[in-house]
Length: 471
Image (cartoon, rainbow, N blue to C red; front, top):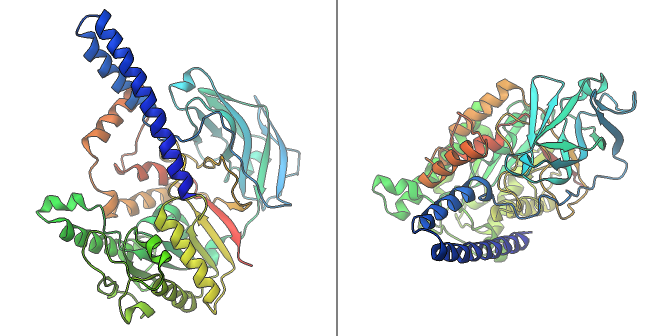
């Protein structure tokens, strides 16, 4: 899937170059037949239009259907949508099926080509809003989790703004245990991944451990403003994010005695996997011994013996942690959906550790903090629901679990993100200007809780996990 991401990027850049070439030829023609001042004005207007409507990284057509397969025997019900709401057959939806996804075609109107098409869901607490791609015309999946009582009662209203919905769809319903009542282990490739994906889950879990694999030290240019060179800035960033990985979970009720920082180096997991016996130090900090940032861990681990940042040591560490904390459920990145190289290899290392461990967990809960196809998902403003992400190529047929987060939990999650050093770096001037343009021309809004894009994407009415049994 990482190779697919690169292919999508190349295709996107090639298309962009062709558009720019066509625009350049048009500007040359304009300069020949129009007043001199029209050329810089056309350049300015073209740039503003790009920032307002064409700056999104969308590597598929909004007219593509999303393609999801679910496990055989999964409950799927015909659903009809009319002026009086969404309806399924009486008594057809069991009360214990709490994760609900409505598969339905969404079509943008002319205004939905310039403003984000929105689906408004009225039934439970307040009005939920779920946004889709401008120009959408395809099958999409609305997240109705938490709306079961309104649906069974016949008063769940759904309507589009800047779009219209088909009158017929399919409701996919999933029954899951409450995994917060099981022993959980959250695998975070970097500090903040646990909070982004699962703060709502782990903050109410009966027993949870959080394992962060890397210190996240690279791309530390912000800290060079303190008069540090690249290596010193990377070391400072690694220490700060290590502190985040151990301290921030306490805001969600998880003490440092149940948090572990392994101290491996950012973006080195793929290289480690390729040569399992070899150590791979930091690309930027100059360090190659993981022991320094492990001194606050609650237990000794195999790599503490030599500090070598190797794949074999990483897997051995994870085996030791599985056998120490004995989790029943593992929360980890989706290896097919989330393309970040460290995320893919974090789950790969975990799967190898499961094979070697004497303790066998029962279930994987898979999350995606990044996507191949769309850098805005979940689309729309903070506090909205989480519709299913774009899926143009088939994924494994997993069940889904989407617990709802109340307003108080969403506020706490936003504050947990605000404590993360990597999410508190000020926006570059270019991004600030782009947001002003999109606010004025495209109607987009960002939350007051923080400037980083993850404050918009992660603080939502739902968290979303793909459920994969371990057999």
